[in-house]
Image 1: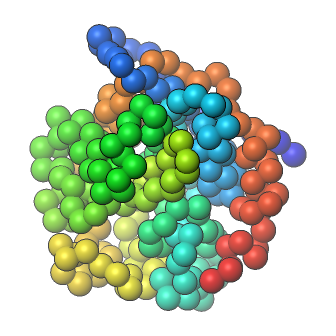
Image 2: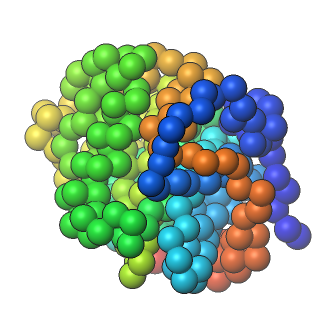
Amino acid sequence: MAPREKRSTDGGSRFAWRGRPKRPWRRHTMLLLDLTLPTPAENLALDEALLEEAEAAGRPLETLRLWEPSHLFVVVGRSSQRAQEVRLEACREAGVAVLRRASGGAAVVVGPGCLMYAAVLSYQLRPALRAVDHAHRFVLERIARSLRRLVPSVRRCGISDLALDDRKFSGNSMRTKRTHFLYHGTLLYDFPLRWADRLLNTPPRQPTYRRRRSHGQFLINLPLSLTPLRAALIEAWPISGPRRDWPRQDTLRLVAERYGRREWHEVR
């Protein structure tokens, strides 16, 4: 069965981005895809399908996708050891699925109150971003600048985090291909943070600024509602318009081959 499209993260049309003032951009333009699919597997697959689509296009094809999970689940990084990073028994008792994404990084808990984004970016348009540290800095500083107009204490911390002062509200990771890369992450704004301590172990690798704090002491919700948060993310990028399509068949294939298969999620 093909995935059903849900309404957009702002509660209206999934392309409800009207009202944003026009600006004299732009050398680089992107399309906006505001689309949440019904299941965690489909949503993870769509991020990767957008990257595969761009690779196959034969030209730069940049997309910003926004979505928000409808229920709680845990996502581990491509190389993560599940038992090391996740309280698997607690997840089973709570009925929380544990899935694996295509990008790196450590385990996260996501759900309602956590806005997710994925940016597919072109190396042809942005050759300096082939250096991974430049890619992290480019994306996160761009988002941070936009958010600081609303919350001045937003800053980049560690390699791939955004924080309010020294408390993290956004974790991010990337997957690289030949001509494009996927940069995606989380932004906590109304998330029940108690779930992190309940479902996740202490991460094996920690940035210095964490100072070995527990998840509950370290994480924080951004003090914004969804509408201004979503608008700030869009404003951070040279969006030229909405996408009228999405790689449906590639998403279904990736669910069948990978994200819908237990052996993918439990490989480590």
